[in-house]
Figure 1 (cartoon, rainbow, N blue to C red):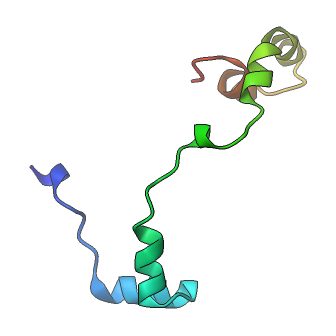
Figure 2 (cartoon, rainbow, N blue to C red):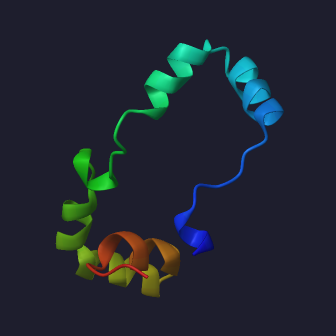
Figure 3 (spheres, rainbow, N blue to C red):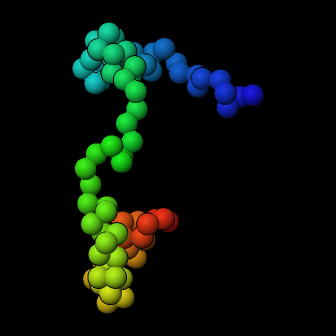
Length: 79
């Protein structure tokens, strides 16, 4: 299956990227080997926004905050 295979990356493009970032090849490999982190591993105001959901709903209804903000940050499920 094509999705399971790693993406093709031209070697010249990778060399250019490493050069533009100002890393050595070993530094780049070290950074790329770090396991990925997820947004919930960082401190955010999301829980507070969820608690204040009725307040943000009123602000959304009066066009004081955009609907995208209300849906993304104040609702528990998001979009």
